[in-house]
Image (cartoon, rainbow, N blue to C red; front, side, top):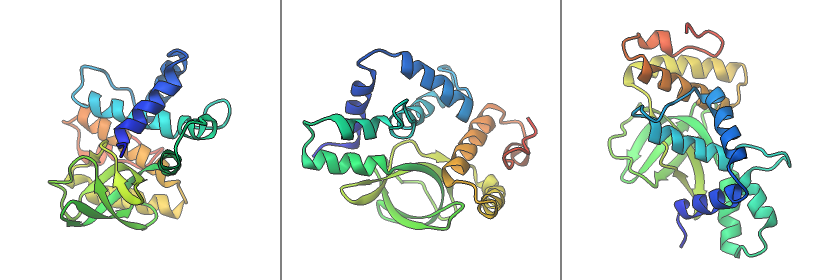
Length: 211
């Protein structure tokens, strides 16, 4: 059985075989959405993975399709199993979650902004996650099971109450859950960069940022 990484590598190869111009443009777009990160920063590997997931699974091309959707539509050599898994990846998304309960290798999570709950496993490790943790992660179906990708961002415990307030306000204004997750990811990057700044000055509702 092919792994998540196998599919991502295949998508990246298909999307960049004609050159890296679009890849470079996409990276600049992503920096505008998520905040700029440099290769000298500790978060670089994680943020690069987050960018690649966004580029291959979320970003629309000139044809109105994501790379995953484009491969699914145009590659006649895909097997039925590959078509099914790519269809799952096309439906994936990055969201904010609160950990409700850990159950062995799986985690019961509640989606911030909507309250939807899932019992999901991780292709990385969920060791260390505890009830009440706030995370942002890409959720997708792998062999029909809700699954986390590796790019999990763990927010500090001290930010939990503020994140709940932001999420409640986001729900009241019908903010898209993916937009909320993107904002929370950006706040965590800012906190990592300015660790001497109080959390309540970093985690702010969109449009109310202090810096």
